[in-house]
Figure 1 (tube, rainbow, N blue to C red):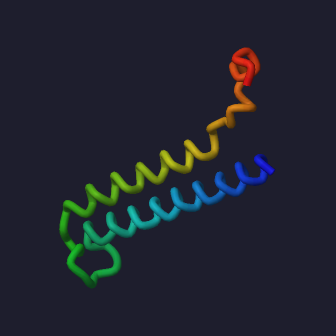
Figure 2: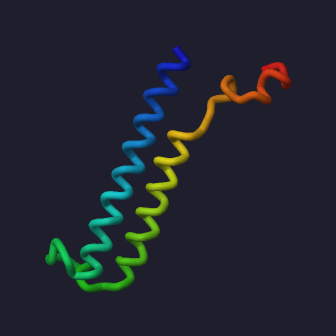
Length: 82
């Protein structure tokens, strides 16, 4: 049951990261006045910065969720008696 939970949470975590990347890209495009030219974010350079930060955090989330190991899979867990 634990492996199923780990797999589902890995997918959910990856989807959240991908959503963060997509929203960050939209913010960047609006800040650069390239897309979705309606709203308070259009042409505001600070949204390019905020969007870049959000996209990087989303990328880190995707990488972390797909490269982390569970405690049982780590080689040092066997030595610690876990």
